[in-house]
Length: 408
Image (cartoon, rainbow, N blue to C red; front, top):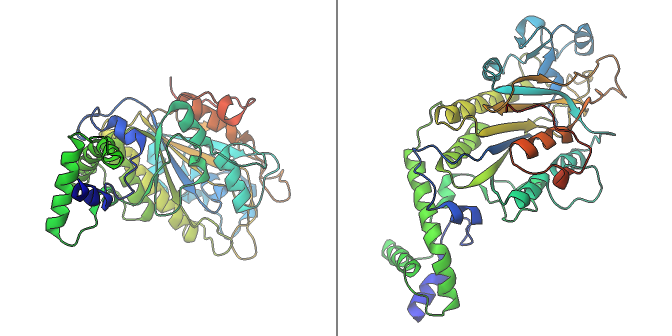
C-alpha cells in the first residue's frame, strides 16, 4: 500500500492540477464526441480590448464633417470606410467584420459607457468587470452569473484570470494551450511514468479501502482521464472549418473553438487583446491602430465562421468591449487620449444584427469626451437574461432595461 501511495503522491493528473474543474467532471462521460453537435446551452465568449480602443476610428461616422475637423491626420477618408449603412462604416482593416455584419452576424451598440466616466485604466476596467459603479469590488459580473446558473468558464491566455470571472462556484482555469491538459508525472524515466499512469488508472477503477488519499484520487481520476483523453484527441484531430490568422488573438479564439466543440460544459470563455492605448502615432487608414483592428477582425471572423460551420453558430455570442474609448479630437502626437462613449460589438448567429442606440454627438462633447448614450449595464442585462439564463437584477442590480440584441 505504501508503494501505491508514494506513487500517487508524486502524480499530477492534469497540467493545471489534480483538482479538476467541476464542470469537466460533470460532462466527461455525458457529452458527445468532438465531431458531433454539442449541447444546446448558449455560450458567451468575451474579448477584452485592453488599453482603451478608439471607437471613433472603429465604427466611423462616414458623412459627419466634424469627424474630419477633429481628426485631420488620423481620420479615415470616407471613400476607404467599409460602408454599413448611409451614416456609418467600419475601419478598412475590418473587412471580415463588415461581411459578418452584412450576413446579420454582427451587432453594434453606439456610445456605450457609464455616468461620470473614469479616465483610469484600472478603475474603468474594474467597473466593466464587476458591472456596477460602487467603490467596493469583490466579485465579477460573470463570476456571479456562474454562481447563479452553476456554469463553468475558461480564461484563455497566460495572464491571470480577470476580475470579471471571480466569484463563481468553480475557479475558472487559465490556460494557454491544450498541451496544458496533459498528465504529468514526477518520474525519472518513461518506464516509471508508464507505471505511474497504469497505477492511477487502476486505482480509479478499484476500491480505496478507506485510504483518504486513494479515495481522493479515485473520485477524480476517472473524470480527469476521460476529459484529458478527449482533449488530447481533439487537439490531434481538430481541423478548423475556417483558417485562423497566425496572430495572438487568432490562437486564443481557435483554442476557444476547440474547447467549445469538445462540449466540456463551460459556458463562458474569456480572452484579452492588448495594445489599444494609442496616445501617439496611432495612424488612420494604416498604422498601429489599423493593425490592431485587422488582427481583431480576422480572428473573430475565423472564429464565428468556424463555429457556424460546425453547427454551433446560434449557440455562441462574442462580446467585444474596451474599458473606455478615446477623445474625439486627435492630440499633438497624432494619437488620441483617454475618452469615453465607445461602441460595443457583438458577433454570432443568435443576434438581431444591425446597429443599436444613438451615436454620441461630435459637437456636444464634455471636456473633449464623447458623451455616452447607452449604459453598458443594459448590454450586460441582455446577455445575462437572454444568453446565460440569469436574472440581471441578481448581478447588476435594478434599473437596467435589456437592449434588443438577440433574436427570439
